[in-house]
Length: 382
Image (spheres, one colour):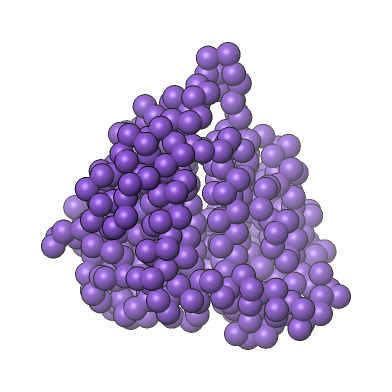
């Protein structure tokens, strides 16, 4: 997009960013609007009808009607959807099935992805878009995004008489939604998928070789994806080609997710391999893209205009935007697919509107976070 007019680009980006900025300025109003929009959709599903979604008017009604639910509790309903009983949990046909890279009791989670859900995932680009608008670096669009995402198709499973394709959410997102963002991803997701869905070292080396061959003569201005994968790519490039990414490209910004401590624990390695690129954290999961870093403050800001956020804290369940600085809790997200879904992540609040995911919901997570803050000399600073 080297011929992109800066004024036209600015207007386009402003239109995509304004709903987010408005929701940050008024989170209570925005969250109320999101809740009622979600309830309208829930009322079109069997699960929503069973919980009286159409009759709910207040937050108290919602909490009284819909229980906080984990993946294990949702799994029987998801299995029914996979078997073809779509209306149990969805009001539109899924366009793909995403699996987690992690495990739940030793097994990957399967999450349906719908057209509405995919359109919302374009919000991950807000970190990059906000950077471009603030810095007026429209030349970023003259380059390409180094695509290190996971495959969108890993395999198939037989459910009843149907063969269902499944893959990783980052790959599915790139395949379906990247056309809506003003920068091209190289290699294409189809090219990555052609290499198969293996997870061995050799499989990843083949993907890394593809990324190098496709991008070595390109102007890579953006690197987006999974933080540990970006680090593995940098190490492999040095091992196989004798160069680091910074020796090939003048990367402006890295938008990375899938690991706590991207701006602290991982920052030295990223800077050493990719150079002085800006780092912007994305907070998301297989179930959705929930927030992204807005500025140089090293924490992400929620997508209050898209998802409904609650947190289970020591003092009870409260809205995410009601948390006080220093307070922690287990996040509960209502998505277009899953009402009141407890992901299993611990969130730490800073000054509004900033948050960090500090790890999984385990007894030692807060201790590990405190230790990392000491070792990186960050000491809970933004």
